[in-house]
Image 1: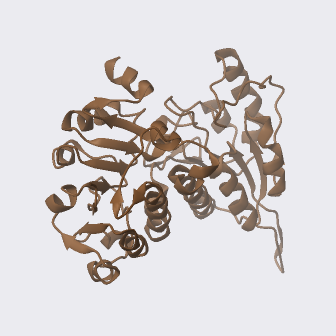
Image 2: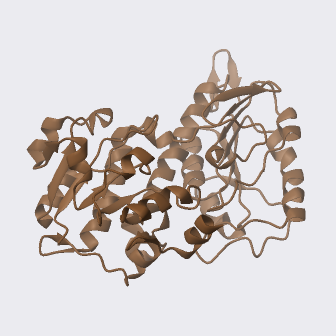
Image 3: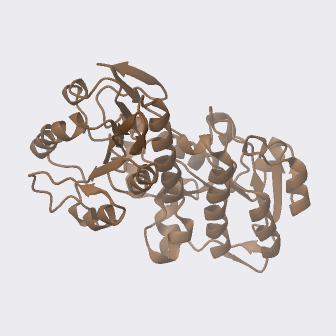
Length: 377
């Protein structure tokens, strides 16, 4: 029976979040589960060990946290962390299975039953477990704030004794969760906002937030998969898309790019030519930097200045807002655990739609077919 939940301190560079908070510790207590939190696990999220203990958790060593029946994490376990799991232990975490299949293979070799939060299916019953959307919302919000601080202009329309200041023009590329939050945030700051997405179906969502939807003369009826994600365009369409976007990018003070295709390199939407045509001091924040970037000139986790344009490539913006990011992520993890907990024990049902989709390793094997093909390929 799986009765203990381990919460290790995150060790990945720049990772400040934690997978459980005092709020969710209290909820685990009500489920009858014991919670073992590594010392200082919540320090970067402004949570003290005393607060965890007050909520009912036991503060333990790293080894004891990893020895729990069920370990919850934010970042995928490193090679050093993978060997700390007990044989047959369970893990729920972000695992980047399509980007790091060998990391998943390490967990399988250790006998860990691993559930990937990235692979939670987009069904109504699993909405409360959608960690990707929760973190994407934070990233979209923070991207706009960062852009506003870099831009050498005001965002809103201002009428002053010194004259009128025109609002900044913001273009958001990709209208998924991050993109929609970026639109809403830029609008709150007073910018004039437009947005482009290859999925014409999101036009109403963009317009409902007060932004203009950019339409290109491009045939894109098949640009969305069954899960609602964008699909890769054929090479010729992709080339045409970047050409058609150039004038829209050129007239923007800020570009926030969010276009990602699960398991694939990010599509290039902002060419060097497009950057060259932007006004001096303009800003690009590329949220696809971890997957190669939507801009040809993006460099991960740094800000570069090319053709007098600032280009930022952040790969973990939620970690810059760890208080709320940890709270939101911890709730999605709790929702997953609570769904399969009964009589004081976590009892996963791997025939259930949610776990059948999200489980990547079990019984010493990689069980997700797509990840398995990447491991073997």
